[in-house]
Image (cartoon, rainbow, N blue to C red; front, side, top):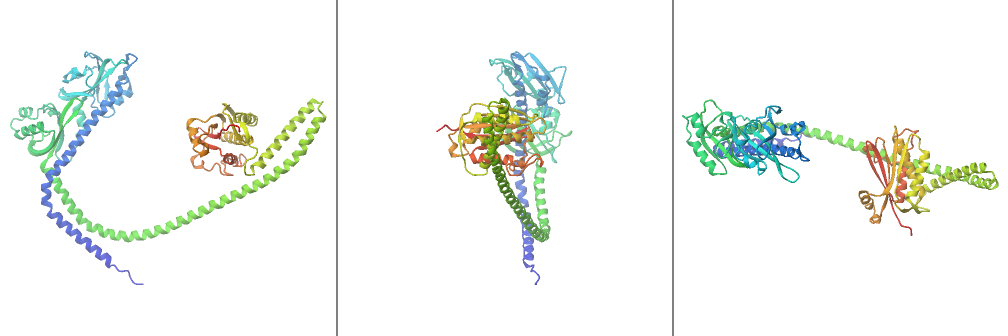
Length: 601
């Protein structure tokens, strides 16, 4: 056997090396073009950062608004204020995200404080109530009339910035009773949710319509006019580009630009060239501008650095491809092993299916044997009972004057008749087709079966029965009684401790009726009687729910069950074209039997 040729593999490796070198040359030639595109890319990145900051700001204000709205819906009950501020659940709903909430106050329409608590460090403070300076909001008086449904304008108090969230409280006649006020510390909100640390110079800031700083990484800048107040503190700096920036931002809703400015977070600001992206936003009744800035050269440097990384990655590509070649050989070997294992799994599956088929055939053979033996035994028992019943009738007629003897003989006679009826039922069960079907009152047949079962079930079993007049149906009474006997027997055997069984008879409810009528075209306009047998057992595990009607399948011990009870129920149900549903849960199981109702011909 000749050694396999490696010419194709060598040709592939040479081709990849050539393409890698070509890619490196193309990348190097486009390096200068990348520098021109860096500015545009930097501006796009800043615009995305700015958009993200705007979304976060809107979501944070909205989350506090929703918490305040939920609180307001429960504060005025039956004409009285319910001081839910004391409610820990309400406190948690307002403090669940950040400590940006500065307090919670209930103000009357004339401006009087009704209830209130300050918030500090994610906790409500018991005393004293300061209410900050709520009326510094230019829209505060308008808010007291109930006209503002979310928030007013931003304002400054105690060297920080706030915005008030408002929620009017109405009574049942929709008369304004009070206003809930939740002041938000904007700088706290900014520091916790918006100010993200990057590996480069840059930050996001928020200003109001007067170009005063509302949110900034440096708390010292809060309340500053971006030009006038900075000129007072730093008189020797150049503000010409800041004046240009202010004019551009006031005349445009959104945009990007570059300008000379300073990093105001430093103790001694140094002049830098910045990239900036800005956008005006409206939140409630407030109109703010959100602006994100970064170092122009650092942003470009990152873009160029990315291209150098690409060059390095292309250089590594060659080594990776060589490793891929080795991995391909190993993969081929592993794939061959996998195919062999797959063949073994398929063989095991085939053997398992064969075993299940043999088991099914054995069960059918057992059923045939049991049926044959049962038929023979019952036929002989019927032969024994026939002369017994005849002789009992003669004795009753001859000894009619002896009342005590007649009573005893009558009891033996009835027992013999029941035995003969049982043997007839067993013989009938082993044959296909329906015989002697008549119109019966479903209620009467079920009631008779329950009365019999009340005698037969153990005394520890609680058997209750509720019935309603449902009408007549054409069936064999013994069929229904056998079903009930097996279901009730199965129910109390399933409940080990204090068995409780509830049997109910009623017309099918709408949901169940719709399910019954879908069973067959012949049932689409039929009414149904619904018989439910419910126990308090442990329920039927999902993994065996489909097996419970299989002959000889049982979860009981050999002395407690044969595995034929539910099989008989299923067989009689199918023979009469009735419908059987199962609803099982850990607290018990319910079998629902649907019987189509008929009018007598």
